[in-house]
Amino acid sequence: EDADRLAAFDARVAADDFIEPKDWMPEAYRKTLIRQISQHAHSEVVGMLPEGNWLTRAPSLRRKAILLAKIQDEGGHGLYLYSAAETLGVTREELIEALHSGRAKYSTIFNYPTLTWADIGAIGWLVDGAAIMNQVALQRTSYGPYARAMVRICKEESFHQRQGYEALMVLANGTHAQRRMAQDALNRWWWPSLMMFGPPDDNSPNSAQSIRWRIKRETNDELRQRFIDATVPQAEALGLSIPDPALKWNEATQHYDCGQIDWEEFYAVVRGEGATAKDRIQARIDAWEKNAWVREAALAHAAKRSTKQAA
Ligand code: 3HC
Image (cartoon, rainbow, N blue to C red; front, side, top):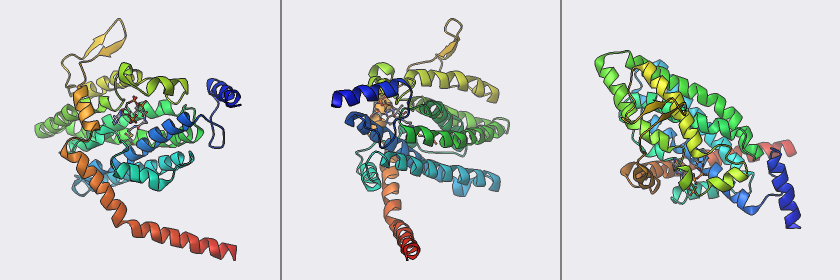
């Protein structure tokens, strides 16, 4: 009987149907979706920290208001994605506990420190730019709630990318010191941004199954290449140089060839090595504990409201 249900499930995925929470699904499909969606949510929430570091030091009220709006969006993306993960039968507490205990991952990009204001521009331009490449593809992921969450998130993400690029444009066209600051940020954020797409396809344990289940619609390397091809001309428009001496346009393939990514660094950051990783998790644990009263108040308020309505 499971064979029939599995055949029906595979046929629906192959027909590009959305799988919905109440549909039968293989346990392994459910499990890998909880893994990916919850880690996506953790990335959004931890990603608020490096940018939050510059809120009180934004160079103008305009920049501060834009950054505040972006950070608020990221928090919303996180809650959206936690809710999508909960439709698969896991509780918010379990998801948060997995992050705080270090069992769950979040994108390595957020373990890098934001050393200057230019980093805020580089994050918007490169990190949100890479996230857009990945998330546009995820709008067609086979799990309905995840795909629909992506539609809204992608709209807000393009604002994030543009505001970052515009902030860097101001610096790149500013004083020598500002230009140097913009170039220094590109030098530090370029390679970690390429790592956001995950390990190479020939070393990506989840990809084959995720492609078969149409959770992943394009491979890590395909999306990474698309990001490089789109971003190099943007760097040229800023008059900044990409920190990769091997980068060059390949007329035959119509793509940029680029140098070797340091996967040793990637796996070290995934393992949580480096001071920032410990600070990030500690900051999340402190926030969760310090703000427990907000959750309790909201729950008490909701309970009061529902008893009033019931009466
Ligand atoms: N950082 C940390 N871990 C990573 C990683 C990264 N950049 N890239 C891959 N990994 C992990 C995977 O999670 C997996 O470990 P796991 O099995 O314990 O989860 C392992 O490395 C092997 O990688 P695979 O390629 O086999 O894993 P996936 O098939 O899951 O592909 C992925 C990785 C492309 C990141 C995929 O999970 C994905 O598309 N996730 C959704 C997008 C996402 O999470 N983006 C993170 C950034 S969100 C963001 O930037 C928000 C923006 O607003 C700033």
